[in-house]
Image (cartoon, rainbow, N blue to C red; front, side, top):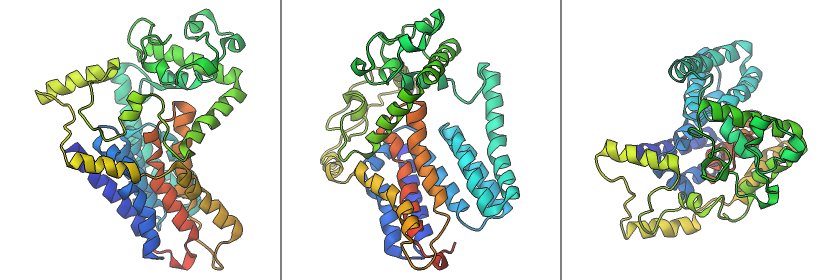
Length: 379
């Protein structure tokens, strides 16, 4: 049922993109919607029990509403959609600020106030429940852990000079000889995982956050350089194995039933899922259909370099006045959101191939709208 609903959400996302563009030239709308419909990795993502497909649909829905004529009802629905997206993936929280900036330009202060009320009230209610339940401030209990993971690509304790309680998280190896960042959240040999208690306890998360903030403060240039290096993985032509074969394999349609998960948190989840289902939960590989989709995945994938080209279209169109008529000015909202969805994960956690996919429909929408003559824009 989850896979079925997520496939429907993927189709709905493509429909939203197409509807926004089709009044100019339907074939451009088809091109803009094609990646979310046809990219085999998008289809594979919709098979997984992860939050990205629902998140992608909610953000695209909010954008569709935001680039049309704005009234108080639309502003309120946009806010509720952003709240739902944020409670699906916390990366949605900074996107509210992006929406606020553009809605102020499009609709004024009243529109922004209504949108913020629709977004922040549900989030505040959830934060209150989270605090009452877990006695922790925030929406999740892993901000510090993943920021620590992020800084381990460059953190040098000889430069940072952390206090003794924080120094237990140091890795004496030079950054160039360290494993991928994800190692530091999951591997039993990670300094963080070795600490008493579970990795995501309040004490361990707070300690990891102190380490990470000290690393960023002590080495801002190295942090910026590592951010650019991680972000550049988005735009490579191929799809190199990263961060390791186990994670990489999650995004490939398998030829045989995958082995049980090896990481501690995943093994606990698998045990609970089997208890809930009262039976096995392993992926079933049914031939010949599985072979067809594997063959399709070998050829029908959006190259990262093409994602970069799509992202370059709006600024080039704006700089060169691509058409004689004035073009639509509201491409800025999906364009800024696409970049935010690519940058924020690598700035606060790690690069992951699945984090790229929700940004693609927004990038395609922005590119198409940036080429659309203004008199052709209708809702």
